[in-house]
Length: 437
Image (tube, rainbow, N blue to C red; front, side):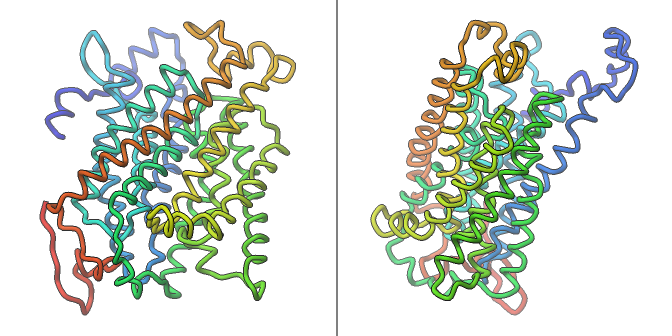
């Protein structure tokens, strides 16, 4: 990795010491025009989501907190380095110098790429070895970079918050891997699959961090100005609507009418998934003129669909399709991601000059250059095509990678030792186990 960085990675003009000369050449009067000051606050929020939000959200298992946070830390740190290279080769390789020039926006996009792999991790949480996770991340980042290039560059679909590129791909990638790695005797670890008071409390931290920072996630790489502003407002409202809907549906689904804390804060049950699913579902259309009430509607329906998914679809997936989805990523990422792709396609196709303005349409959908003659109906079609690409890459790629991970060389835990930190971590009062790369 160090050698590849030495050969290819360089600072871009806004992070290089030649920025002084760039300012003079472009008549820039203040350093405040540097993209760092526009993007870094959003980068901070996204970075916290990746390492704190995803990590602590997966601590709901009573004996797998080290694995949830520690392995999240490991694969995210590895993945973001590989992502800078892969995304750089596909998106920003300078043909004259053969170098990749990175800035703060590159760091945000690398975190987005890693998010897709962390989503997939949720499906196999507690059932795979750290070496398998690194292999899964290596191939996941590679597949992500390719499908991202196809969707955003070749199809020219808009997906600022990654409903398609990140969540749909990551969800189906993880589900496909989980299906290939199906464990018919996983019931031998049933005693480890529950939660306790303190594990639920830590999981709540992850839930709240993700929920609070999701507006930054959906707006981080949108155009400066009205697009970024609108993405924050839409996501903010959608998330709030989803919480109310989810609490109501979750309460109604309980015989006593009480709220179950496990259901509220863990990804493996319905309420946490649904409270966050609204942010996923609005990722594609976040910067569009969906209107504030439209954002509330998306949140309302996403809350219902995601919550009901836990009650009816998750048992079906495990019993009939043999998909053991530890964290319920189908209800938090895969299904809401598809909803987001559909909402984005419909919203794009319904866009009009009377609502956006002529220049607004051009700016929002980037109808410039080779795409200057594209109509909104055509754009809607390409948005839908982008969603299909993400599903295909997730399912097919996950099936292939799952087959590789199924080889008996990776040191994965036995059926009776799944969901237990002591297999790979030295824990207080426990046995000392180790692994090697």
